[in-house]
Image (tube, rainbow, N blue to C red; front, side):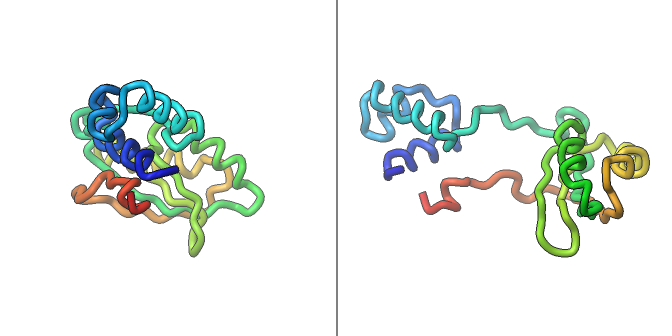
Length: 151
């Protein structure tokens, strides 16, 4: 991956709706080589997809929580499969430390979060214990991956 690929990724990360003509102008390429580079970035998996960034509050999801979960040793595969299917779990990361996973959950309000914690999370395979932190406000939602990589 060269400097131009990094530049393309940074541009698309900032605005995935840029046309190939705009991308080409901003990178100094012509349209066809620009399109081929973007296509190659998609094929290698450097670009996973394109999506709109949706404001959770606009959909009535006012409560954001981060939940550290400990799972029984022999139930990790089943837990991960259940997490992938669960619509309230926005993100899940396997972790090293006192707990096994960190979940990011969105809910309408505290009552809906409580319902999830008491009525659903405990029922996921292998859950032994969990600890919840509720976010009071969002400071930074999505940084630049290309900036982290030095691009």
